[in-house]
Length: 316
Image 1 (tube, rainbow, N blue to C red):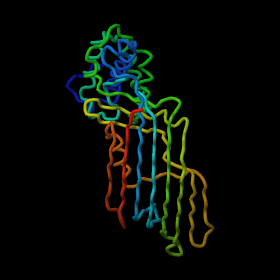
Image 2: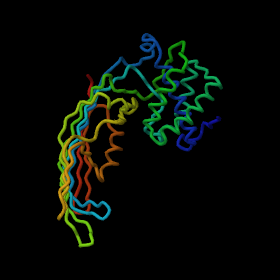
Image 3: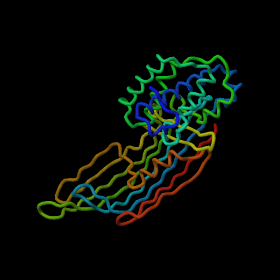
Image 4: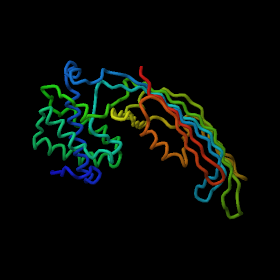
């Protein structure tokens, strides 16, 4: 596959983009397989652990609709996550969470290969092209899946360089943080929501109410494996992906409809970010490497939604 150097990476076909990512990941895997003394020689940071702490509080009062049902909701909820990441000097040239910022990913990967004397063969490139097609089938548009599975594919096959790469940091700007094992994850979920509304029936409008409550603190052992954090050493921007980290907690749900028996459910209750979901997802990809706060607020039909975000990325 011939990929022109002047084409932005987001303009490439999906398989071409995946091949570029695999090339970058292969270079990354090769460079991070250096012996300890070589890694120190090129200036890689010592192994470090950091704890990411996220606290998200939301209040919302406003109307919601679900098919024929509509009503006024009052919702308060809290989601707190604390997760320990580790970085032993692992770097990458490509950011799988931001394809639009990777115009130079292919050129950087090729420079890293040349400096390391990797000399990838045509056969190896053909294998990676096949792997790129498989990744596209397996992961679709899930960039975190591509990053995770791409690292698995490239790390075992990448050849080991024979000499330190001087100045590799310029071509490998992202520090890769992965969850420590065993998983050191803490999650707190609190939900207090009340919905009162009505729906149309043959007898007219029928009133109903729903109450959702949850308050649980979790220490999951297996739900942090898919999480990842990338730190851009050029501007200290922190990109976080929390994967399967729980967004629900044990609690209760009760629905009452006039003239019918109430329905009760005990079990996992899901956090609902409503109008703030896109803002929060985007914001978790744009933190900094120390601490900060941010706020989202906007009018909604019948009221307003407000979300307060606090984070820390503290050294241990």
